[in-house]
Length: 136
Image (cartoon, rainbow, N blue to C red; front, side):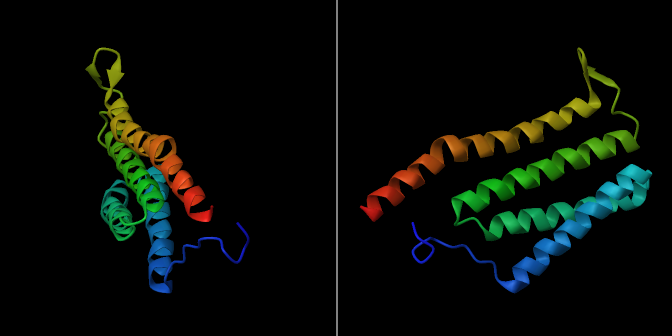
């Protein structure tokens, strides 16, 4: 495709500002984790995850964007759980056999990876095939 016929995805300015604010929330959450500021870290989970879910909802009609934004939301969920497990001291507690409390974070991490795997292995090839059919 040439630059003139290439599909483009543009983000309205108000959404771009929200996405930029989301990065600020995420950084404050992770800085709080690093500095062991428990209260602020836990408080920052709410706006960080809420905005991630809103962004995913807003892009629900674009399969690529939805898949990536859902993966980010699951990443933030896993990351937040891991942070909280460290703050409350159950990150190294045995929960099942050799698995510790922090290993439960692998559940949302894995869900995010599976969403992306589905997109790249199933959905994206369909989109490429559809694009090839349209341009022929």
